[in-house]
Length: 64
Image (cartoon, rainbow, N blue to C red; front, side, top):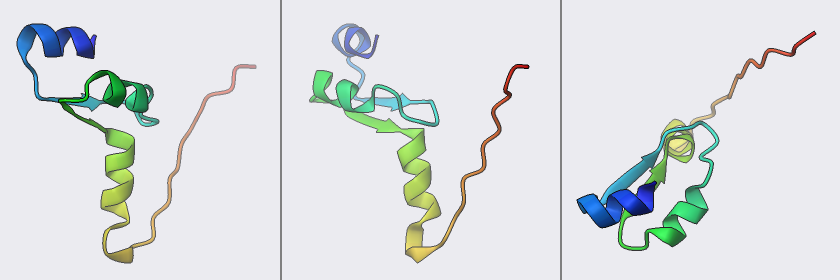
């Protein structure tokens, strides 16, 4: 989908909007002329800025 948008619309940047950044590496390879970032990695870098400690808390419902 990103490749199609880059070719047809000339987009210069893409954001992978999922916590685990699925497909980030593959998207970067497929779109070498575009900036491709993921919200997961971006958040981790921001949280750790200036050596700050941080935690990740997730909740996953387990079906019974």
